Structures are given as C-alpha cells and as structure tokens.
Image 1 (cartoon, rainbow, N blue to C red):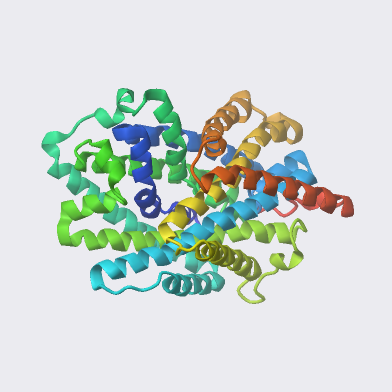
Image 2: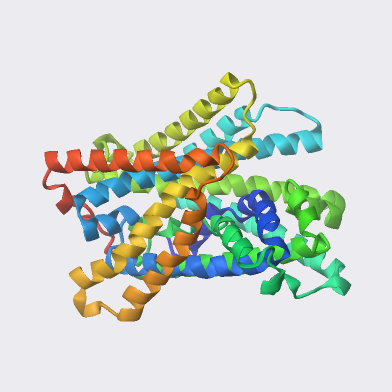
Length: 462
C-alpha cells in the first residue's frame, strides 16, 4: 500500500518541477515580466481550487478512473466514455512530450559536458524502455524511484536558488510580487496565467493511485494539497531567484533558452552540472510517475468497458496494468514518430524542445476540458447522490471558482491569432471532442448497461 507521502511524492515527480520550470519559465517571464512569481502564486491558488474538487470527489468515489469516474457517475455513460477518450488522448499526447524531452535533455547534456553528439531519439528509446520495465515490476518500486528522482531535483534547485539569492543580497527587491510590475497589467497577467498553470500539470496524479493507496478517501486529497502547496512555494522560490539573478530584466529572461540553467552557470560555475543532472532526473521521474498514474486511468476504462477490454488486463503475477502501460507508451512513441516524419517531409528535423512545447500544449488543451467538466460535475454529483452531505461553499462556490479559474487558460489556448502550429490545435481538439462524443453515443447504445459499470470499482480499503 502507498502512504500519503508516497502518493504526494509521485504526484510532484509527475509535475516534474525542474523539467516544467526549465522549459516553461522563459515563456512566462517574456509574457508576465518580472512579476512572474506573483503570477505563479495566483496559478497555485487556481490549481488548489481544482485540487479541492478532486479531493471531494475522491472522498466519495476513490477510483483508479479518476475524472472518468467522476464525470460518468454524474452525467451518465455518454459523458463518461467521452471523458475517457479525451483523458486518454490528452495524457498520451502530453506524455509524448515528456518522453521526447527525456532523451532530448540527456542528448543536450552529453553534448555539453562530453562533446558527444547523440541523436536524441536513441536515449529516448533506451530511457523509456528502462522506465517501462520498472513500472511493470510494480507500483511500489516505480513510485519510490520517481519519488527519489523528485528529491534529487528539488534539492538541487533549492540549493542553487538559495545561493543565487544570497549572492544578490544587496539587490533584493519585492518587485516580483507587486502587481504593478506585471508587463501590460491585467492583459499580461491573463496571458501569463495559462503558462503558470502549465507548470502544475500532473497535480491530479494522486487520484488514479486510489486503489493502491492506504485510506484513499482521506489520503488522496491530502496528497493533492501537499503537492500543490509544495510546488507553489518551490516555484515562487525558483522564479524569484531567477528573476533576481537576471537583475530584474524581463527582456534578458525572455531571451534565454533555459533561464534557470543560465542562472546556475553564473551562480555555481562548474557545479551547474548538478542542475543538468536535476533536469535529467526530473524528466525520467515525470515519465515514470506520469505513465504510472495515467495508464491506470485507461486501464480502469478498459476494465469497465469504456475502452477496448484488453487494456483492462493485468500481469498474472505482479498485478500491474501491463497492457495499459504498453498501449500508453506505444501510442506516445507513434505520435513522436509521426510528428518527426511530418518534419522530415517538410524538409527539417524535429527539435525535442520545440516538440515538448507543441505536444504538451495540445495535450493540456484536452486535459483542461476534462478539468472544467469535472469542476462543473461536483455540485451536481453531491446534490444528486449525496444530498445529506452537500455544502454550499465546499460543493458549489469553490468548484465554481475553480471552473472560472481554469476557463482563463482554456480561453488563451483557443483564442484566434496564435502562431503555427498552435493556431490549429483548437480545431484538432474540437474534432477529437466530436469524434469522442460520436463514439460514446454508439457505444452506449450498443451496451445500455455501460452506465452501471462506470465507477463500479472503488477503493474502499483503509
């Protein structure tokens, strides 16, 4: 059984703070300016509101199905199947970005420190195979490994941040936390807010581990809040150190490919190697924790008949969802291959860093739709199925605030005028949504009992 600390560690490893911060903060700083730490703090509040929704649902329905169970039990079989498809597709696309950057970052590190140019696809395949082998062995082993990787990255980043702040002690300012220093005021905050929310993607990892968790009705919610709080404080520390190290110059921050690595090289010199090592442990830890959790969502959907049934089979001895893990990773690798082939046809090579930004954005767009639907579902579920427990603040007002908060990044992902290829992502998401609904309608008509099976398996152990 996994304890609350194990679940929280897996969740934070899934978030991958080094990976997320390394490749996301430069864009955030270019948009929100030197007040990026304030933007991150507001994003942490928004994610905490979503965490409240997940905690309340998990208290009533602790299930490996997570959002699929929550929406299906609230709005019926068609909504549940649609959510299963959107969730699976969103996480697979997003995980493809993590798989690619795992090999890409190792290739980048080898070239910098050893002068060896290794095509990024080869370390990607090797690291992915090693991670899958570990996950197949069992959730306890892989979760603890992911937690260890998380511990390494967070320790390195905290040390570098503290050293950077100490070295600039005479220049410290509260400007990064003043609303007046957000570039372009409210519009800059609104545009930067989605990027800050992206740093937390993976916060929901805990829910899918409910069946392997000790007292999931209590510990899933606690793990979510512990993870969000820890990541919020950590990101504010990292961002404040980075902004300070760059002399509160937003243009310099935006011009740096990976600002934190630039900060590390200027702060600890040769010891910046450890920052690169932290990035590597972060990508591998996020890969393990993410697939562990997200494959269990599609495993549960296969077990309940929402997706092909073979996905719901487990290893005969280890009892791990091997077919869900294999399917999840195989489709992610096929996406990477297809994306790369498109670049070759277009006359260029695929950059794993650019692919990370593109695939994570497309995957996140689908995942945000699921977040929004789940937040809307919470008051309906409690009002309809547990009316004696319904509370106006906990089950209506807070989910409404969460829905409003998540609508902001969703809007900025679909609004017109974005550069290619991001401009066609909203249309791709709409097509996937319509196809998912069509599949759900056909499946539920063929099997009228499907609605009864959604969420029928809950983790009620203590």
